[in-house]
Figure: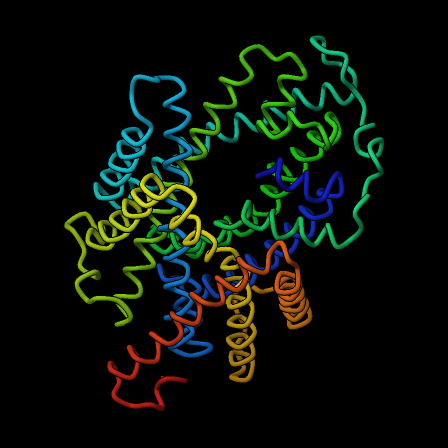
Length: 427
């Protein structure tokens, strides 16, 4: 992902990451405001239903579920390819199935399993990134003993810092937004914790440090130490930097961290998809059977439904490589931006309604409503750019298409549920 972003934007990818990080920070603050006031496992889908209308909650909830059940097989295949390279006598698809089964069992076992697995996954990822930053930082300042790579010359020595103009920076935002997507999961997971309001506050505040450390600092090291136009960068930005610095067993170390990240993403995806499915079922927007809980508090049928969808995606990817699954994946191209837009509009409407009643949230969005409107404007600008850009237009229209299908379904479901056409807009 980083290699693609760098090739798209050149060293100016730093600006793209900064802009995307700022947008995500604002969106998370808005979501945090709503989540602290009303903790709910349906998160922004529930808030959209309340603030905009049941059709909005239905549409955005199913879009979000659709996104994650397609991400699950992508990550399973990525992890399987790493394991297959280590153990070539075992087929890649067998590893993919094994990974999905293990994570499904863990999600079915107990409501706390997600947090326990994610703790260890996150610990390995954090240690790996911090180690990379330390090694890279030593190299930038000329203190790395194993190679003669130093300084920040690569930031400007290959055509300049921003050789393709600001339009490329916007294109970089489109690529990097998927690196950040998933930050909102904390508001879903926190709803099942013992003290959801405190957990949501803390998680929202930590987003700033995660963006600065995991994204901006690490990408700065990459574009400082290696040339953006080096073909070898495609093998993986972190891996290529470490190999350039002659770090022993660089590929193996990066593969271990990447495998952990893949499992973490799958774990989060399965958890999030199942909780969104469960929330939709509770509101009558999904089959009612999915709202049943096991004795351990797990929406087991929602977990199984999301897992089956992931298995189908995995099967499609192996049986129809580059065809059916690639088309399905293209429908997720702009879902992140659509979700962020709905979060911003929901917060704007909920906060406005709250203030009209003379109330004020405990955890507030900064400089309301100015920054909320600014975030909405930026999201619309990026979506507009996607519509006119030949590189992103197909994905954008694919997302619009699947959104339209979800929207049409919402009207039929809500009409059937309520029997009143007026309830399609407000309840």
